[in-house]
Image: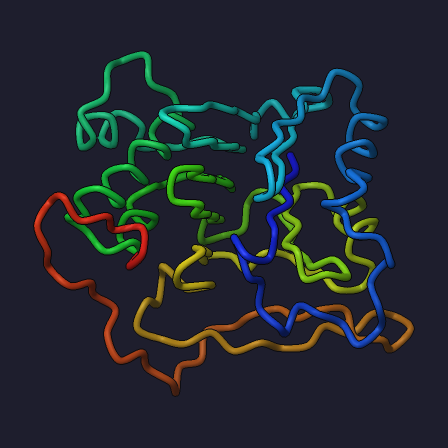
Length: 251
């Protein structure tokens, strides 16, 4: 799976940018990564999100234990890879019918968070038990929501191209092609949103500290992010407001 988001929609952390330059071409303008995915996986599907970016996926060469799913509900696009262990509990929690699968659960969890916000965002992700990575884009509010399970069970990477656009994929070679050395594994136990950036759902009260990655030739390749036990956030909660409020600006 692949997603590319314009920097105005999803600003990636500055620490992902390597001092050794990324490829000169903007992956959004030339469409090279989607074309590359199509060349590797014939039959792949690309969804153009206009100026916001693109989402692409293929059902080719899947790990049967970590299948890929894609769905669109009310202008919310979601790519999901993996499986959720507590599907029945989450279906009941979000009032979903028996046919709902993992990707529908993630979309409904996001919609509940956006529209009613009964729980903080970190709790919403923490309640999802299993092995997973997902990429969600809400075209109505131009908001992204990305997460990986606590163990990082699904290979998942992120990076930035020469113009600061965000690239996400389960294929490290695709990310390298678009980002050069400005990439890293997506931090396990973390989630990323347009409004709040990268946060840990396991340690929501703590800041995340970038740690530069160095490759075999001694060059810096983006950064990994670790929970900083010494630095606490001012507040992990969200203000209480009426149900008509759009929570997407606060999660």
